[in-house]
Image (cartoon, rainbow, N blue to C red; front, side, top):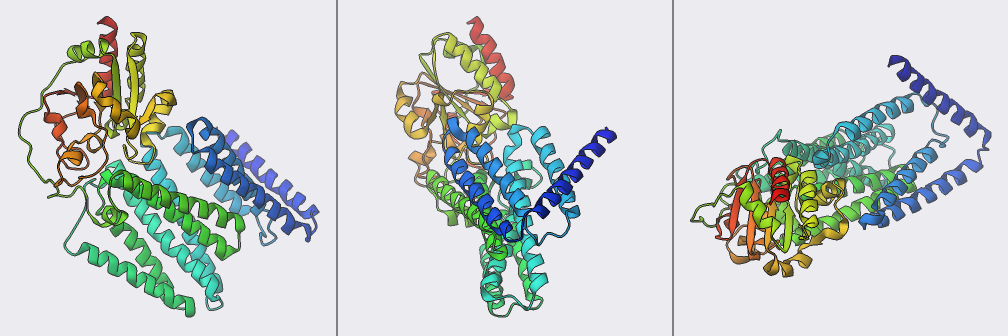
Length: 484
């Protein structure tokens, strides 16, 4: 194994030496034009990749195009004459490649939100370090434009680093998912941010002194305080916002370094993340300010107490209902991700389809802990995209659906959002499974879930609860349906 590692390292070192020789054969006048051409092609690939990822059938092609674009951007950067040595670049390449490979190989698909949060943190940390290095290098000699770019870069970069790490900790269970609040928290957070922005403005005109590092420290602190009071139920919006902040920090890095491909890629990333955040907030019928400062899911958000009991059912009873149904709609949620039940769900759906049952999957835009979380998991289980329906498409069919099977979802199927104007989620569009003839809810227990809000769906007369691990329950249901 050691011999293999040494051979790989030697090959990388040899490649950089060949590249250095090749770079030396190009005239000084040709290099800027070559770099600009490479950056132009990389930018086109980024734009094409983003467009292609808007549809599942072309998403893989888009990812590959974006990856090639990033490779070209890195290669173009290596042509810069300012690079005098490749030793530290090789070290960074090896370390980064090892971390990336480990994350892609051993991190399960169900942990994709955590991996995404870490990626945002790493990207923002790189931008922040570049900004600090540029300030240290040119301190006292920075013009207003470059200081503005560097200040914006480290301000949003620092917020994204610690904010993404707190989001990772919440998703991983290292920090409690419910909001962490204290009296006067919003006032403290806003005051801290205003003070950091004030220092930023001062530095634009007087770019010297310890104030720059104070601003960096305040940005790191604000990132922690910003995400701590946000409940885990709002993590999809937080993830999207962190993506936007990381992109904007990268764009600012491009302005600071006069790097056009960074400006383009960062702007695409920043504004696409911002637009996605707005769309997700609309899907929850909430504003971004409410998500950031509302402490959704904290104690005291429950508007009413629900009377009644949850009716428990068995695998055999559910199997009979499913086997003789005309149409079944599956509604996946975060519980499916934690149980890694996507493959078992596909197995059950295949069994039903062989019996002539019409099967559909209802996908809520904010189901899970990151944008598109359910789509990614179902795609991993090879669920045809044609069977995935958004809530606007599937809700009209619910009254004619024989059985709706809820797999670990909570707020996205809570009828209180539609019926109770005093509910904390009032007005949020939901998948109206309660209108189906029968509703089967797969849950581990009688808990309220991450949001902390009770769901009256579980107490309705047409709802039955199938308790246990979702993966195990779905596997047993597939076997029972075959024998029904």
